[in-house]
Image (cartoon, rainbow, N blue to C red):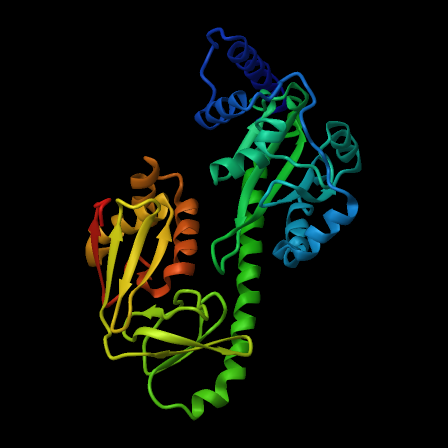
Length: 392
């Protein structure tokens, strides 16, 4: 979009912004993602004319968060891609953690000084609850990529800006690691920015996955003497349940994350007892039953899943969303469901497939091979029944 067109659009958005906040009818409705965010921040009492809370952390606290963040493994790749663009002199590359705290800023010194005046600094809290509608905070709230331009921001001080942000997840367990954001003066917005941010997130997640594969290979080498002398089916997995090696059983990629205080459920093996290894776990069957019977109780709060095999059952609490996903997969049968179909069922549209994949990945940390992928479905040898009895 040309600068003239950007300026015209910015003026239109200012009129929409002012009309909505004054309670009058806007000339056009704000985009759905913007309307949802404005509704949230109005209910939080954010002042569009004020300087709402930034409350930056101390440099020492920021350094500690950087040191412990897995994003530290990929920050160089993110910067390299986003700062190599031709118009990088007009924007900042910002990476925040999963709580919305700004950990890294790179880019134009001129834009950085402007951001300093806005309180958009290292250690600042950039959530909707702190500073109103903004791409970082709104991407956190929506669990999806967000691009905001000019007066789509809630605070008047942010109106001269655009920002494009996307969540970045840990491919190991699906957990949210943080937000990658590009921000700059509104009238310098380039149409390729959104694609660049998306590409940087994919690159970073791929690098995290390669790091994970390297750790699995190290565990595989460590366990090799044990495997060569063992009889019977077994698995060697890491702390997240990812399979480094297997013998006598076909498990493609992942079981539930092992714990010392309970058995783990593995289709084809039944309930297994985890044994600690250096850097991982040895998983061997504890009984003869290989069919796993799941009962999902939707009448309890929270929803409870009971898993029965040969030995004593175990139970795991599920969030309402995860219970909804499991029920949908159970009703789908062996054909399973794609991320697109699940997005429609859970959110009413097909635009939340990234969120669906992250939710499934988080579920598999607790349920492991009870869930299968491509498409999403129950694992082999898993039977699910659903009850909705509060007296149960």
